[in-house]
Length: 146
Image (cartoon, rainbow, N blue to C red; front, top):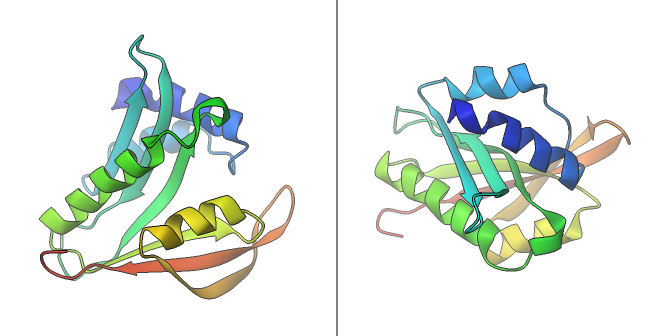
């Protein structure tokens, strides 16, 4: 996964996500409870990624930190595939809840997450920078066998 951090950062830039440093990605992917996935096209080009944390303790709460799909190939199921993989790790570790934040203005992302069962259950004022914007806190409850 360390080999993929530059690709993750390039996708992040293409998607105008809140920026992480390369060192930030490196320090995250080496954590034992990090779940990171990268999607590649047939030619090997990185086209999407998801990075989050799935605690090793089943009492913990999982969190999606970033998910990005190159804008020119969105709506082809890549985000769904990445989220499915992440949630499978959560289920394997018997995690019962997943959290994430989405920019309040990112209606496409909020609608995507809602379609996957996430619910908006709070706001984090001024969570994002450049521009300053509130975050919608979203959660998904995983039930055994779901």
